[in-house]
Image (cartoon, rainbow, N blue to C red; front, side, top):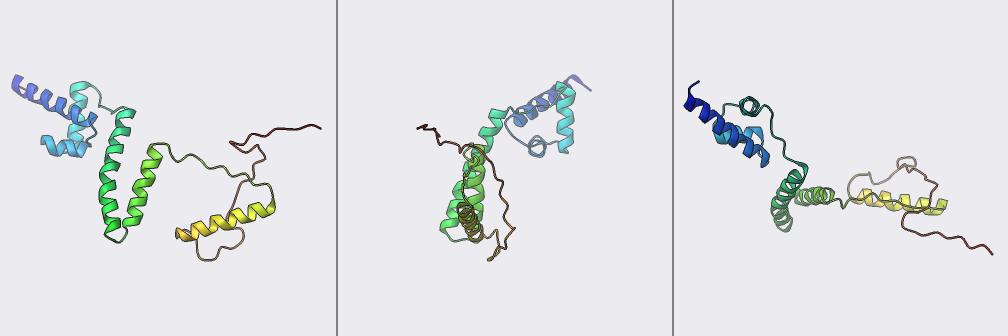
Length: 162
């Protein structure tokens, strides 16, 4: 390999590295830099750098946040235009955004009587039916709940001794 070829290979590998770190896929890099295949890009980085780049976690989070933002506008526009599947698409984008930002904290329900448990199961089943995730009628035993004998989260309990 001539000096010029080595310099060109080094420049392409360096550019491939930059693109990979900025979030491009191996296929996108191959297409942009004229490599025959994604595996050739991978091999070029390995040969030149001895390793392959991995974007750090904070960068990947920001990259996905930007991708979600890019999807939200068209999804919302489709909802307003009444396109088929638009609500489901927008809901999916919103769910991914909430998960990415940690807004999907687990829900804890504290029930103390059989009547409360039955009412909660009825409400849960109604919401699942509205979402299309359950048939119109739910038979007993279709919904399971774990009973936890513990203090409710976020409620301060105190004891008063007379």
